[in-house]
View 1: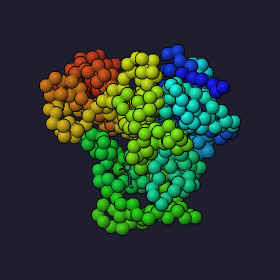
View 2: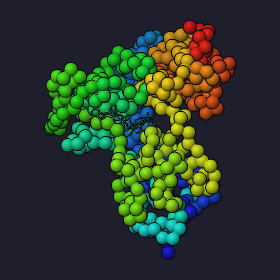
View 3: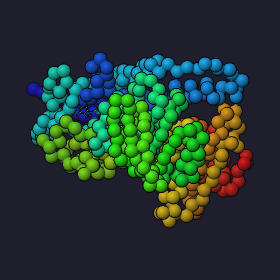
Length: 475
Ligand code: FAD
Ligand code: NAI
């Protein structure tokens, strides 16, 4: 007889492994199936995020930032660093170690929480009374059954039609994290989150980087003022971003890649590059799940259709993370995983989509939560705005990093914070205060009246809150 579980989670990325742990904490017998293999063919749970996403990209961003500092900023501190060299192989090896530490950490956590881990591909075999039979194809093949199924199979990089990823010259996020030597010329298509983060890594290491963006506006989802400030900083760094282009034929040759495109002025341009990274978004992944066997409903994008509670069209089958609607972010996937486990237990798990933070880990970092000024205008909401530049913050001056600002938007009548937008040093950490404030429906005045440590970057958030009431103290 096949092994029986209360909850079977398919996919061990941030959505899946967190759902499995939370379900186990709630007293269920839980299985988690993940097919990701490390270089030795062993299990490597953690999904895109751990293996080819959040974690390795941040490792490379850190290494390349150190290199950039040694080359361009140490001198300001009186430090002489001559002949600074980057050993790319060592940088990649360090990144791989960081990834492995995370893989191993997840395996440990699953074990600690008594989640049974299966290494292989999970697919629907059949539907029985009150449960589903799931086939696990790994080194061996076996069948397990689950009363509840949580699908967390993530997403894959979107390819440009006619230009498949070969991961040698034409790279997805996977190949972009494994480039063995600094390319002289690097082209990227798409100036979204991956384009900017990966473009930054290789620019800092010495590549001549050109990013081609189809839309006429830079970072359209970001508050305009913040996006403008970020663009100014990227221009200064030499990160070439061309907006409003139309990409035409791409030739993947022996020596590199040629991208033919039409620029915003309508001129035909030929761009030669050693490597091309295509970062034009991601597509939900249901490959190999055999959804047809049980009649699981997908939408026209291939995403699993779910309601606000992550319920699919099938009783007892749930889906979370990148494979469903909403932002493709690890922390969104995790929150959905926790909420679904709690709903299965009859509790009231909840994910607040209004307070999901976004971070782009460039330098300066860009982070935001809530609505932008352009969204508030479009929605006809009366608001007050307060900004505070890092230039006027003592800690930022001491750090030698005064680019950017904190911007707070609050309701004109109630003073409730509606959005916080940051471009500048450690925006990724600063945004947490704004998320907490918005979760507690704080007013700008609440933040303005809270004591913030001095000297700290977080004082800029307090000052932005004071600016909402036009009473900054340090600017
Ligand atoms: P995934 O992480 O994709 O995990 C899905 C897992 O399911 C995989 O391990 C896959 O092998 C497995 N799987 C799929 N099908 C099956 C099957 N049939 N059987 C068994 N296993 C299966 N987000 C952030 O919040 N912050 C960041 O800094 C960030 N950086 C990123 C950088 C890059 C370069 C990329 C590409 C993404 C980044 N993201 C970031 C997005 C983040 O990685 C995803 O939102 C997140 O991984 C989604 O989690 P998930 O659990 O839904 O899916
Ligand atoms: P993205 O959606 O962030 O950006 C894609 C960009 O490509 C857009 O600006 C789009 O206009 C452009 N584009 C699309 N088609 C194009 C074409 N044919 N020609 C030129 N430009 C085109 O997608 P990206 O960067 O691939 O990242 C995927 C997702 O992964 C992100 O949306 C995010 O959810 C997640 N991610 C999150 C990170 C973080 O949280 N720091 C880091 C990296 C990825």
